[in-house]
Length: 262
Ligand code: ADP
Image 1 (tube, protein in one colour):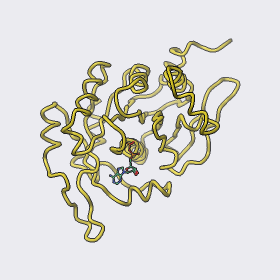
Image 2: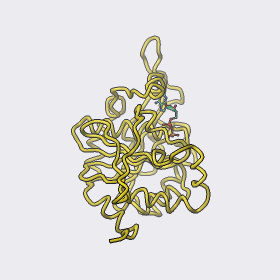
Image 3: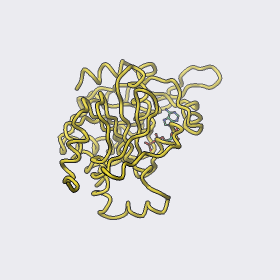
Image 4: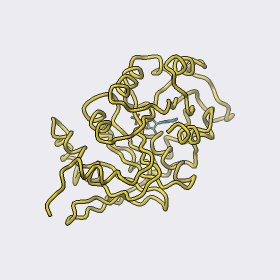
């Protein structure tokens, strides 16, 4: 008996998952968690078995966004964590739900967090999944690095805004992916234009085509383009996500491209 080494636990935890997608961004606030949540919801809606793993320590917003109040079930004896059932196709776990209170966020300072993140990934019991969507912290720091190195065979989805795509942040993310050998499926451009609340038409706030040109230069596809939509903020505040599919609003069928790309 005794506890398995963490690498073995990780391998076992991820053994029956077809596609692992790490959702990343160069910086915070671009809508990475939103895209991760809606991607997971959309895939589940299409009939796939989906897991959503929130390891964003900066602002674990996934449970609030989905209106999840119930905590993860921890099986003490086997030291395994059961994710929360959101619906018949989607299960969700946030690293936040393991923390008994806010003060315990203290453990996220210092090198301890690397071990905690790795152990967390190894502790969750998913069983069979078609997709595991991972909400990674922004940037290229220790935690995203740990996630990338722990989840073998994963793919990256990079979320950006039209302003950011021309900046160094995205390039840094892409360099990071290259270094850790994380193949990039493509880019989701979020907050691309604004849906007018009065007439419902889309207003281009940041000009158009810039993001696309940049993505082409980098040899990447823009999988979807999501406008700024006040309903997304409302829905997040109320914990009731919209029935919104990434591929309904974007330039192309993001899911098919994703599945074809992996
Ligand atoms: P990140 O994970 O990159 O830090 P979030 O997903 O938490 O970003 O989003 C930051 C804020 O922006 C949240 O309040 C979210 O509801 C809002 N938001 C994200 N995408 C959109 C969008 N397309 N339209 C309107 N609000 C959005």
